[in-house]
Length: 111
Image (cartoon, rainbow, N blue to C red; front, side):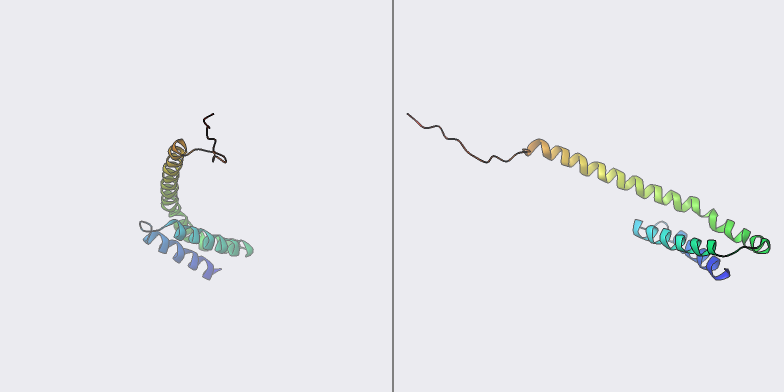
C-alpha cells in the first residue's frame, strides 16, 4: 500500500509540474493510471492505523485535484469552441453546395 500511495503522489506531482503544457492525451493517461492505482488501493483492507498514517499524504494528493480539474475544463471549453467553429463552417458550406446531385439533364428541342 505504501508503494501505491507513493506512486500516486509521484504521478500527481508529475502532471501538476507539467500542467501548463499538458495536452488532453496526457491528462487522459493520467486519469487512467490514477484510476488503476485507486482500484489497487480499494482492494487493500485498511486498518485504523493505516488511515491515520496515510490521511495527510492523501489530502496533499487531493489538494491538486482543483488545479487538474481546472486544466481539464479549459481543454474541454477549447474543444467545444473549435467544434462550434467547425460546425458553423459546415453550415455555411451547405448553403453553397446543393444537398442533391442532378441525375439527368433535360434539353429543350426546337420543333
